[in-house]
Figure: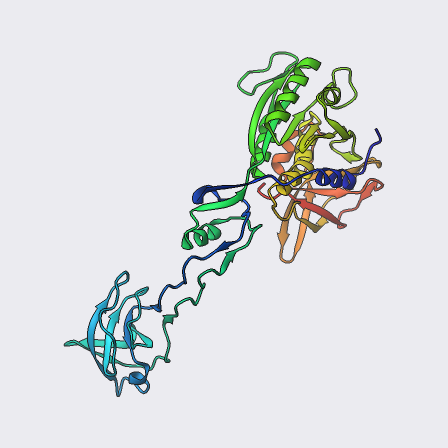
Length: 406
């Protein structure tokens, strides 16, 4: 199978990615999910004409010429706290003491701020003019009954949680979280709780892949470490494809005699769509499908695995949930140090970028190849070097993929 370009790999993955089903969840479980249906208000908001200030509800005509020298003096007929209903209508020469959020009584068309008044002996002196209609939020001013307040495809953030609560949407229609199965392969790999014996390494990929899937909005199933055995691989691939929407495996996808993942995938009914990408890091990356299930065989080197998850698996997860945009944002940035590479593959270089004014600057973090996981802790993005480029001079403008959340 021929090696393909990165853009083609992304296209193939997304062309084979389907949207998951719609479900409904409790309001406080919807944070970070994608709204699957339009939400309409079941009430007017505000549901009545309400005061936006503490003060006095009055007839605007009464205070049209009020001043400190010649205040309007009005009879106070009642007090209206928030959460109560006015009992008396207001006529000329009258006022009601009113609190912020309380309904405006019948007959009143203006609320005077308490700061512009003086009260004594059951009467209020209005010392300044308030424009008629002032300090009142009208019924339905924000939202009308049956008005759409949120549209399908909206990412639910804290403000959206507040809107959902305000319109009584306590069960929220969202796209189901896709389930990502995570597998680490290799007889030399041990779990993080174990101190490696000679010839062994800890399973860092399983943890990082799981956290990346969670950050992309997925649910996860950790399926453990699988030894370099065709039967063991076929068993875990079969289980993963039966129980997960996406199965990710790290290791066992290059050309060594113990790199058995692709053969096991085929034996489990997977159609392999590509197995090498003209990219660095991450060339030996395998992708296949079985029905609507996706499977990614990621390289075992940690940086390669992380880059593959961010650039290929994450967009698929976001498409499954109808999230937008699918990809991390890309910005133009000035490179602060020279960079060299061996031409041949498009390279995604871990870098640290920051915005200075209206422009971005970036410097690549020194790393020791695709096994150097520690370099990623100093990075918040990847700058892109085209395959045919050998040297990028400091001061050049480069594309930087910003890894959101890093």
